[in-house]
Image 1 (cartoon, helix red, strand yellow):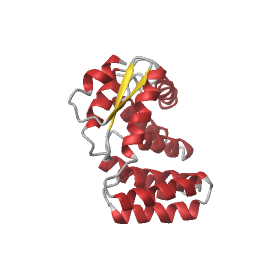
Image 2 (cartoon, helix red, strand yellow):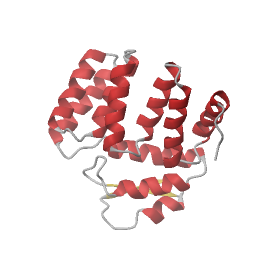
Image 3 (cartoon, helix red, strand yellow):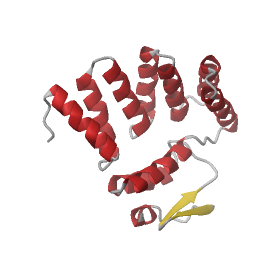
Image 4 (tube, helix red, strand yellow):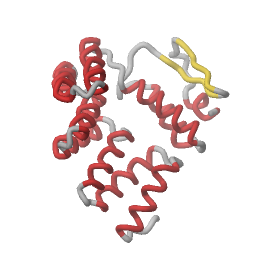
Length: 192
């Protein structure tokens, strides 16, 4: 976890969280434009244990889900609650409203994609996955979500492309490495 601390030097911290030997910085505002994300992603690229990976991923998720446009964040949080309770139509509407308030809010697109996926609407889900990736190319959740859709649609080559892109962000994630290995076997692709 020392890699995270190394990548987060700067002093723009309001609070610090300790997990084992790892320290994490928190700040009041965020989203995919938060400057701390670069440090988190650098640490994620170096993380070797699944514990390190999951802790860093969680910090990234929390950062993505905060938004300076408080109205957008409030609506987004209501969408998260609607999705959690399987009120999918309401969740779609709330995420759409959050996007209307902040069209660059990548995580609102991602959560709408997730909701569409849960509803079985893979076309709409993949559309929002693409917008999420356009806004935040390092969005491992959207990349792996795209892989799931591609797998369910029988598009193993496309699934492998999504997984390999996720591995560029988190190259030591053992779950993703196993999925990539399986997909390479199915597609006949070679790991370069």
